[in-house]
Image (cartoon, protein in one colour):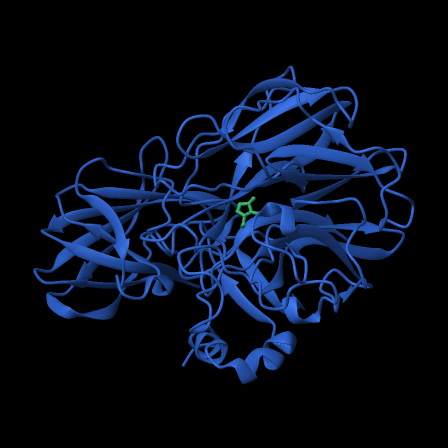
Length: 456
Ligand code: FUB
C-alpha cells in the first residue's frame, strides 16, 4: 500500500483526524497539484524562499452532516514545494471544531489566505459564526497565528469585528501597511492595525469594478507600482478571473480584462492567487479535475502568468502540464501533456470509479503523439527508459527530443497483452539538460501509457 492509499484509508476514519495533524506526505504532480484529496481556492505565498499553498479542503462529509450537493469543508491543510512538481502536505493546520467563535458543524471553512509579518504567520479564514443563520451574512473572518508557515496555528478567540463575509485576502504594501479585502456579493476592503487582527479604517466598497453578476474572491498584489485587484466574476455563465488596476491599494480600480476565461468543464467557481516565485509569475486556481460530475469537489492547479510591456496581464490558458521542471528519473505522467496530436491521443482516467488514481494516455492512431515540456536529464545521460503500458494488439513507442529534427532517442516495444506491465529499452543517444519529450506511436493500433521513466 503506498502513502496515498494509506492516507485515503486513514482519512475515512474519524479517529485518524489527530494522526493527520502530524503526517507530512509528499506527492509528485502537475495539474491538478494535489492528487490524494480535493483542494480548492489556493492562495500561494513565498515564505523563506519556499512556495506554500493554503487551499480550502473540499470533502464528502460524514453521513448526516454538512450540506448535500454543496461545499463541505471542515479543515485546512498547508502544502509546500521548492520545485513546483513535488508537493509536501504538512497535514491539517486548523479544524472548524478548534475555532472558538465558529459553528463547529458548519463545514464552511471557505477560501483562506496567509501572510507573514514580524516573524509570525497569520492565517485568515472565513467560516460561519456559531448560531448564525444561512447565507453569506452568517460568515465572518477569523485569524489563527503560528511561528512557522506549517503551523501549528492558534485561532483567536473571536472573529475580526466589523467584517461580514468570505474570501479574505491580505496585502501588505511597501510601507508596511496591511490591508484586508473580502467579499459578500461585492468586494470590500479596509486597513488593518499593526496587530493584523483589527480593522483600522472605514470599510470601502469597491463599487467601480463590475457589479453586475456575482463577484467574490479578491486577490490584490503590486508590481512596478501598479496595484492589481483580481477577482472571479460571473459575466456570463460561470466564474472567470478578471482584474482592474490602480495606483493605490484602496483604488479606485480601473477594469482591465480577463485573466482566465470560464472553464470548459463548467465548474461554477474559480478562485485564484498570483505569486512571483524565482523570477516567474504564477496563477494558482482550481477546477474539477478529480470530480468531473460534481463541481463542489475541486482541485488546485497552477500555470505560468505573463505581463505585457504596459503591465497588462496576458490571458492564461489552463494546461494539464502546469508548472515546474520534471526530473527524467521521476515517473513522467505524460497524460499531463503540454501538447498532443488532434487525432488518436487522449488522456482518460485509469479508473473512472477512482479518479485519485490519475490518468493514462491512450495513443490509438498511427503517428499519434504527445509532448511533455521540460524534462530534466541533468548532466548524466540516461541508459534506459521504462514505460508502464498495456496494449491488446502490441505496438511500438518512439521517444524523441522535441526540436527542429525531433531526434529519436529510444524505441520501446509494448508486447501484446491485456495487463499493465513495465517495458524497458536502451536510450541510444546522449541526452542531457532540460528538453521537451515527444512520445509517439510508430506501430500498432492502440497503446495505453501510465508513465515514462528514465534510468541512469
Ligand atoms: O470554496 C468556497 C467558495 O467557493 C469560496 O469561498 C469562493 O471563492 C468559491 O471558490
